[in-house]
Length: 408
Image (cartoon, rainbow, N blue to C red; front, top):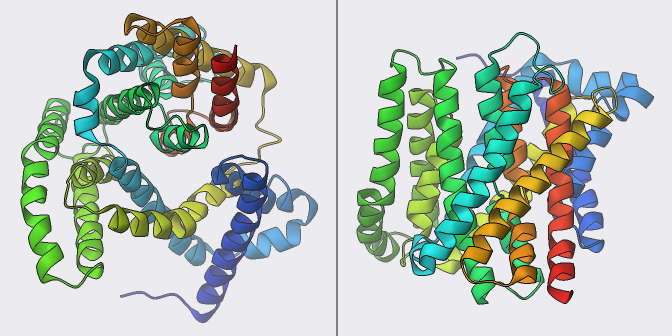
C-alpha cells in the first residue's frame, strides 16, 4: 500500500492548519456582522487561493497548494468526506412528521417554490445557452441543472435565519421549514437523475439507476426509518454513549454514501437520505445531534468551504452580467413561487412575501450542487462563480428581507 512521504505529510498538515485557522478567524468576523459562518469560510478560501494569495504572493501559494500532488490528493479525500458529512447533517435537520403536520400548505409552498424557479432556471439557459456559458456540452442537461440549482433551498440556513428572527416555533416558521424539507428532498432527487443522464452509472442502465434511486429513497423514508427507530434504543442502552450512536451513525452514513456513489448519482444523496431517516427518529437525542453538528460544522465544513476558494480565481472568472442574470432568476423564481404558494395557504401579502424571502436562502447546498456540476463538466468556472455569489447574496439577504417584509 502506497503511503505519503515525509514532505507530503508536512505539506498536508500545513494546508490543513492554514485552512482551519483562517476559516475560524473569518467565520468569527462574519458572525460579528450577523452573517452565517459559511460566508467567512468562503472568504478565507478566496484569500488562500489563486484569487488573492496566488496573485500577490505566488511563490508561497505555489509551495503551499501547488507543489505537492500527493498532499493535494490527500486533502481532496478530506474534502470529499466533508461534503458527505455536510449533507448528512442537513438530512438530520429534516423532520418528516413536521412535513406531514403542515399538510397542504407546506406542499403548496414547496412545489410552487420548486416548480416556478425550475422553469425560469431551465427556460433562460436553454434559449440563451451561449450567454449562460454553455460551449459544446449537452444543452438539455445544462438547462436541467440550472433549473435544479435555482430551485434548491438550503435548509440549515433557513433554520438559522428563523431562529435569529424568533420565528422558528411560529406557524409561519414551521411552514417554511417543512416546505424547505420537501424542497430539498425533491431537488436532490432531480439532481441525482441528472447525474444518471450523464452516464456516471457504470454498468447500470439509466432506467435501472433511476429505478434503484427511487426505490432506495422510498425504502430509507419508510422501512429504513422504521428499522432505525427500532434499533436505536438498543444502541443507546447497550453501547457506550455517545460513542456508540456516533460511530454507528458515521459508519452507516458512509455505507449509504458508498451505495449511491456506486449507483452513479453521487455519495451525498445517500448521506442525505440516511440523515433524514436517522434525524426523524425519536430515539436520536438532541444532545447526540448537537455533538455531530458541532464536530462537522467546526472541523469538516470549514475545510470544504475554504477548498472552494482554492479551486478557482474568482476575479478572472467573475462576469457581472451573468451573475446579475442568475441573481434575478433566483430571486424572482423563489419569491414568486413560494410567495404564491403561501398566499394559497391562507397567508396575507406581507406574510407571503416573507415566506418567499425565507425560502430564497441557498447557502451551502447551492455551492455543493455547483461544485459537483463543475467537477462533472456540466458547467464552466464562470457559471460556478456566479452560483457561489448567488448563494452568498441569497443567504445574507434572506433574514433582513424577511424582517423588512413583516414590518411593512
